[in-house]
Image (cartoon, one colour):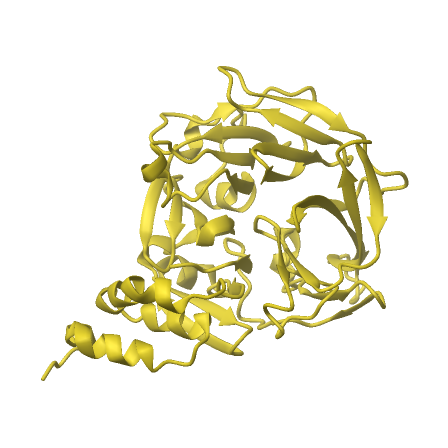
Length: 379
C-alpha cells in the first residue's frame, strides 16, 4: 500500500476524480494536491469541464514582508466554495504577481526576472528581465522598490500553452516605468521593445479582437500597432465627456464588445494624522461604438459581473456562475501606496443601487510586494 498520496495507482486516482462533485473548482483543487493527481485530471478534463472554472482570488501572503519573501506557499480564496486554501507554488516565492487571461500569472521577483506562470500546472515561461526595458530609473533604486512600483499591468495576446501548436510565441504587452510606458515582448526575446507614442501614463491595456488597445490616464483610447519593427500607439478615440482625470480607467471585453470602466476615489484621513488612504466611491461603465468611435455610459450589465484590479480585467456571466452577483463589479486594491498604513480597498460595487459591500478581506493579507489578484484558473 502506498505510504504517499502521490504514489497512489493511477486507476485509484481516476476513480476518486470521477466521484467528485461536478464542479470545476472541486476538480481543480483536487489537481493541486500533487503532480500525479494533476496528470490524471488532465487526462479526464475533456470529459469533466463543461464550463470554465469560476474566478479565484490569489491573496497576498503576509503583512510581514520578510516572511513573504521566504514563503513558497501561496493562499487562494475560491468564492464558489467559500474556501481558503494553501498551494505549494515555489515559482511564485517572494514575487509580485499580476493576473492575466488563460489562467496565467506574471511574476516579478527581487532578482528582477519576469516570468509567465501557470500556477496549477506550475509551468513557467521566461520573459526578458527588467533591465532590458528602455526607460530605466535615473537614480539607484533597490529591488524592493522596483517590485512595488516599476511594473503596472500585463496583457497576453494568446494562451502560451496553445502557442507551440500554432508555431508562434505569445506576445505580451506591459505598462512599465515611472510614467507608465508601453512595451512588448515574447518568450525568447532578448529585450522588451518599447511602443512609440506621443504620450505615456497608461492606465490599462487589453488584447481585443486581434489588436492591443491602451487607455491613458486622460481616458484617451489608443490602438497599438505591434507587428512592425517599431511598434507604435496611435490615437483611436477621445475620452467620454465629463470624466475625471484623477480617476483610474480599465478596459474590459464583455459579450464581444469593448468597455471602459472609470473608478472614482476619495482620499480619507480617518485618524486626522495625515495618513491618507484611497477609498473607492463609485464606478462608471462605458461601452465603445467602433463605428462612431464614441463611448456611451451603461447603467446595467444585465447578468454579468466584472473583475477589476491588479489583473487583466474580465467579465463573467452570472447565469454560469450564480454564486456571483449580477450587475456588480468585483474589485481589488491596485494602488500600493496606502498599504503601509494597513488599508486595502477591495469590495463589490452594485451598479444598480450605487453601493459597496465587502468581498474578502483579512488584515494579514497586506504586503508591499504582493496584492490580491483575480484570475480564472485553468488546467
